[in-house]
Image 1 (cartoon, rainbow, N blue to C red):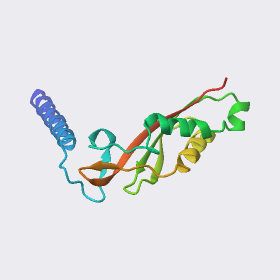
Image 2: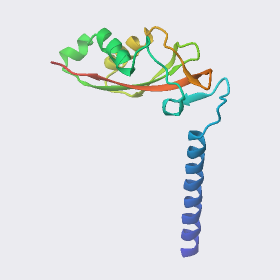
Image 3: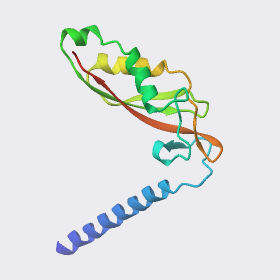
Amino acid sequence: MIKMRKLFLVAAIVLIASGALVAQNKKTMPKEAADNDVVRFDELEEKPTFQGGTADTFIQYVYGRLRYPEDAVKKKIEGRVVLQFIIDTDGSIQDIQVASATHPSLNKEAVRVVSTSPKWNPGKVGDKPVKVRYTLPVSFRLK
């Protein structure tokens, strides 16, 4: 029984170590990304920009267009919705997903606003535009 536990522990350590190596290799990605690869935001040589501004420019865009859902106001519901989406090679927003949900109407409103986004300047690896995964927390607070 003890030998089985040791074997299991060694196997677990090997699996964890190999996972760490895969994660390490992803960070040192080659200069060329395949056409369908989605690159993490922190792995880019040139980050995507929203209307030539900073990340704050997009945050201002989102919060300037949010409408607090009436049902959430009546029920005094607050919360944070975390969205993930792809900034495509042409700068369009694709594949909006709710990564962390709060209340259905708050989730729906956050997705609605992000889906209305104008095109971004895409991220790049070398001179090549790439698809970029972006994560955005959207907080709903009643005043």
